[in-house]
Length: 480
Image: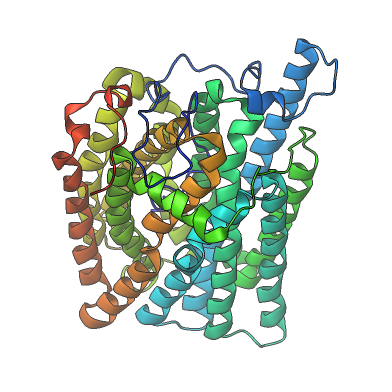
């Protein structure tokens, strides 16, 4: 299952921001109507920039409405193209990096788990300050810097391989630094979209970007398996350096001007971090979403850390077959992304948030039943349904987050959520590795899949169960 852990969508949501007190520990005012109950899917690339932040993003003085819309369409296409490069490259790297460890360095289950932990450690170590830093900088420049860093890191591994210097410690270090680049790129990405298209078209914009991500996840593993079998893991990673460089060029071609944030008063890092934490933990729905997503991510990421090892050593599939199995498993994510707008209107945004996970996660129990015969289809089916559920959940909850959060807090809110929900990922990698060493890979997969099935039950004890849409939320209350 090449579905990224919950909350990895680059696209994300919203409508008119609400104002909040500077003191985020104080009770927050109720949010305005949320845009999570989708309106007809207006194309974000063609919509007029009605939001103030979108208007300031850059038309020259005197530019007419038609010219401004053409510029917005062009900029959004460039932004989406950079997403294609990034998501396809990330999806291929997701398969190629552990294959390099397993096939080239004969990594053990524990070492494979440590590699997964290293990739996500940045969200635990730097998750909170990243948001405060990003809110002080131009977000497009942060994304470009992150892509440049990825280019250098993905070039380093093939060079080390050619010089016979590759090792597991080197893979750990590169995975850690790739995670740092991903952290800053993701926080800036989610905070940049509302300034590019305007808040009235975020649902449609996020759906488009989520479709891009899902499509990359669909194509990436198959391409990765083929390339690893043809070129080796090192050659495959070298190719991904090119996609990261292409993303830099595309982002640099966006014409919309982004003003550097200019706070009226001196900013203090610790105060900014407290504001982000206070806003998230003081909001009853965001607090609940963070708790649930962290639980799902803990066990979903453990399952993902075991997949390549399970399919190669336990089931006995060659690299190309591993890639195609993971590719077919992402069909559910692609279908869910394209249908999310209609599903949300039919079922309700709040209801779909918990229902999507409650229905989909138990299908993970099919994964450990796989073998090198017809039963590999059980792995595909389980991954397909889980991917669909996670995709729908991501669109709903991230759209709500971007809708309810005021613009000046977007970076800090996003980083705080990433810290809370992705901070568990290093632990999940260690958990997967230890369980694999103690009980074997198949049994470890059983344990993680069972825990993942139970994780969404926390939502049944929440106000979401009694709500159809997020608009029925009465507003944030202070954390107790």
